[in-house]
Length: 148
Image (cartoon, rainbow, N blue to C red; front, side, top):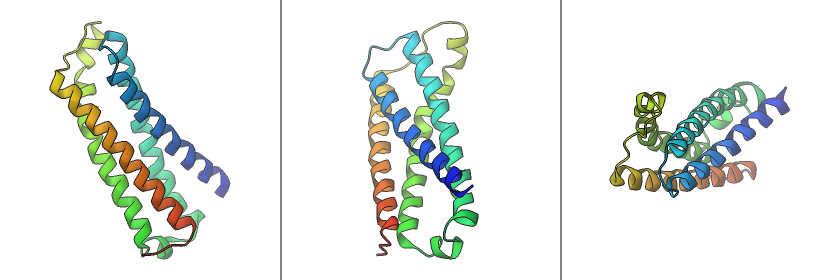
């Protein structure tokens, strides 16, 4: 069971990276009804994977790995969790924009995306990817037993 939970946790994490990259690529393409629908669907997968990471991560900490006493007092783990929280907070802006498109997309109409919104979303996606790099650094440091 431990291996299955770990595998699913890592699969969700890699899927998050994939969704962020896919959203970023789409944001650099001409904005169309198809790209708006894709962005909304990809962002839903992102959200689902983020929830899976939280649930599976809690299970790993509590039941399948070294235990909460190890993780909750580990500064490297706290770095990872802080970076995860920052990435999650950053993701709220694009998600809100994409969710607002629901009515337009149901009517097969191109939703509104101002140039400023588009630029903000691109910047946020890049920051999220940088945050993921910090999360990965934390994971490597933890795996090697590093504590600052």
